[in-house]
Length: 378
Image (cartoon, rainbow, N blue to C red; front, top):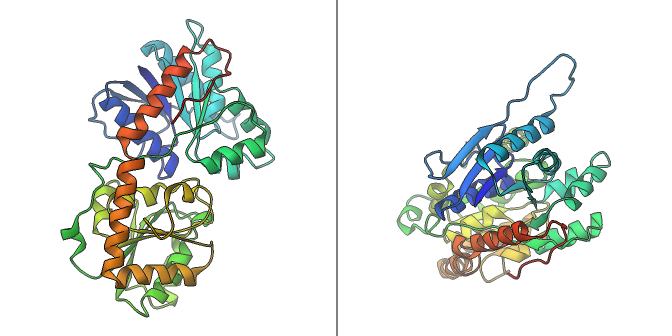
C-alpha cells in the first residue's frame, strides 16, 4: 500500500509512534510518505520505501498566525495525487484530522480515506479546551477510521465526545530486536534510574528529583534525565537546592534510546496521566523494570508486582520505596526484569502489532465509503 503519515515531528510519544510505525511498514514493503513541517525526530532517511514531504507555511502581514492546517491540507492533497496514495493516517487529532478531511475533499480523482489515531493529550487537554472541542469532535467523527493506543483512551473518547463510531484499540509497540537487554552495559558504574519525557507539567519531573533524594538514603544511585521541555529548568534548580546536582545528569533529547535504556537499572515514570506509557514499554523490552503511576492507560501495559510497579500519582514515598527495592534486591530486580522483557515480547512486539494496522488499513480501504465500519478483532 501507499500510505501518507502525518504527525508532530517533535520529541513526544505520538510523533515517535507514528515514525516508528512508518518505518516498520516500509520494511514490510509498503510505500510510506511522511507529510509534516519538519523531519520526524526518529525518522531514518536511509530506510527504503520512506519519503518525506515538507510543509512550507508562508507568512504574510495579513496573517497574525500562519495557517499551518491549510498548508498541510494542500500538501497532503498534492502528495496524495502525485503518488496515488491509498490512504492518509494522521496522528493527533488537531489539526491533522481537519487537514486530512480537507485533503480528502480536494482529491477528486478517487476516494482517499483517512484514519485518525488518538494519542492522549489531543483528547484530554487540547480537545477538552472549549475552543477546540467542537472541531475535535467533528474531525474524529468524519474520520474513515479511528484508532487509539489504550482501552482507557477509547473509553475517554467515547465518554467525553460521545463518539458513536467504533474505535479500534491498537496498542503501542516496540521492536524487541532493537530494544533488548545488555547486562554487560548495566553492570558498570553505580545504580542508574532513568526518566524519559518531554518535561511538561503532566510528566511531574520534579517528583523524579524528590524520589532520588529518598532513594539515595539507602542506595548510591544517580538519575538520568532524557528529554527536554518547559520544566527542565525547575528540575535543575531543585536538584541544586537538594544537593543532588552531582547525582543527576540532564542529557537533553536523545535519538537512540535503544543504546541508552539498556544501561539503566530502573525507569521512573511519575506522570499525572499517561495514555499508554511508551517509555515504559521500551524500558521493559530492555529488561529495565518500570516504576510508574497508576494513571490512564498504564494498567494496559504494567501488571503491578509482576513486570513493574504502579503507585498513586504524587505518592513520592511509595514510588521511591519501589525504586529502592529494585536497586537493592538483586533477586527481585532479576525477576521483574525478566517478566518485563517477556511482556514486551509476547504482547507488544512489532510483529504482533503492525499486522493489526495492516488489517485495519485494508478494512478501511475496502469499505464502501459509509464511514461506518466494524472494528477488526485484536
